[in-house]
Image: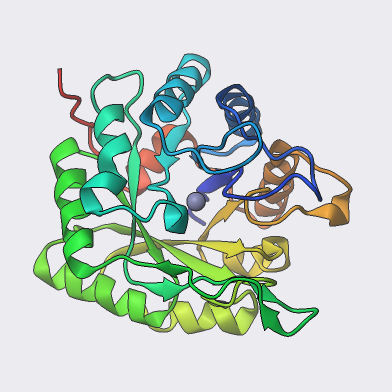
Length: 298
Ligand code: ZN
């Protein structure tokens, strides 16, 4: 079977109250990037965080972190545009990537496009109530076309996220328009616990994503479970030829005590190998996704 692309999602906006190993600061993210790379991850996804864990959108954070990662290992870098925590206009949300693209030592490899909009309020399962009531993850069609234009300009790879079938339908529409080139790399976002915005992190939730993939398009898919335990699904994903995006950013994995991101990556690699799939190296990941050279503005 094909090699498997394993992405480390090291922090998102996760707190440290259940697992203290969530990295916040650049030096902590760089350390985790190298450790996850050493265990077999070929992509790193991270969010800028301040020392107290609040979101940090300053370009300097990303420049320092990317340069630190590039010094240590060639893992492919997938930064965030700030998710719902960065509710700026399209240009504002992409501003940090524009800064990263000014030098080879800070340029990422991917830029994300969540291809649709969705309510992302925090559900409180123990109280049957919402802890927030006004969090909308807005990605207008115009905004997405701006992102696609800038991603193409810089020679980056689109990292497409589908939270539900309507997102996949917009991905198909964008492919018909030529806004999304093939092969498309699509991350199916399952959600559990305090997040209801995606499909449930169950076999049925994943099947509902894959069954709606357009059959006549070249789409390579990976899976996350935001706020849920993706290890419950990794065997199915590995057997179906999918790829895996996992880490402490999504779920603290306290079933194993207080594991590090690298320890979670090691578990996935071990399972994939046992099922006949070797982890893709960075170069193999670039080949699978047909990634070109990024164009840095000199
Ligand atoms: Zn993220």
